Image 1 (cartoon, rainbow, N blue to C red):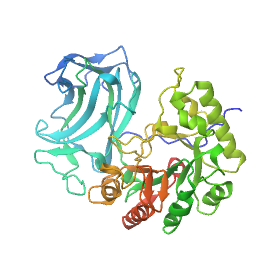
Image 2 (image 1 turned 180 degrees about the vertical axis):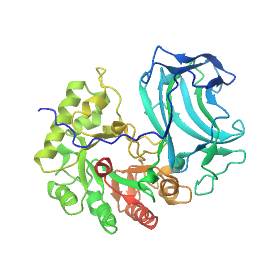
Image 3 (image 1 turned 90 degrees about the vertical axis):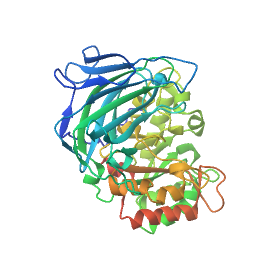
Image 4 (image 1 turned 180 degrees about the horizontal axis):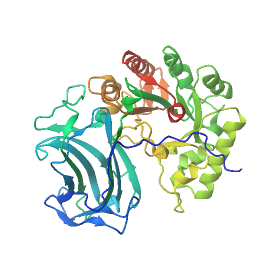
Length: 430
């Protein structure tokens, strides 16, 4: 099958302020554990003629809690107004296995007063940041992690101020297993999601084509006119407990849903794209897009099986293969930040999964809808919140993949009561 070019191309978010770290940028390194640094690194860059590089001392010890920290910062600069704004970072980690996390600070008085974001937390499962690649991360007020000094956050996670920031810091903390090198190419200020969606933006998505979503989820969404995105496994349509073709067409044609792609073959879905060869992935994604077109479905979005977007077993980028047929790729990573509009990396969209009373933390329905939960953060402080459900069940959830239909209805009421905009993923991109 020939490549089917994606129809939707996300627009670029222009920056109102940019630091690209060219000659004379005025930033410096600090922290007790800087190994080496190069504030004018001409060896690796993607803008201008240089970037900034910093390597932690990397004093590997048997104690995993023994880690090193290194910072690149600017203190006492011209005050920045971040009202209605987000911070966009462009950086590269040479080896993510050496990284614990990356944080970013804004503040005053030498950062005695500050807000802090976690730009990336390294995990042993799925990492949004991959080794040796340039990545963009957008930090919005809805994801600020902590406040210090005279700065504070309300119970709804609204910051005490969003303007007058003179100090900025990019912080690298290693994993205690050796030196970690990070290159910082730019720090930028862009419009946040609230600029376009004053009460916040939500996309309600479903994986794996379970028919109980049609029976128990769709009616609760129809009550408010909410439209979802269902990510489809093509060869499972019409099998036990899954959508049949008539239901899938009803979701699109009668309720306005986006019917999107998840895999063509269930067997490939179970193997995951990063557990298959490039030839298998390319054939599956091509067949899936062809199946959608042949059956009259308009979706241009994709969700990676298992949320995994790394490399195939023979070393080819899964993202690059999927991008031949779909405009976006959705993960199930929500470790640190939500998505922005437009998303800086549309083939690596973040989402919150495991939304169930069987889950703890952000994904528990009570926490999601409660004060300071992700609905509040998206509504009051920005961020495109992509929710990922699997099954909507009538009884007690058997696992984090099951959301009780009453909990689901309560989440829909909470979204409606906040006046939040609800759109399928493809509509946001278009």
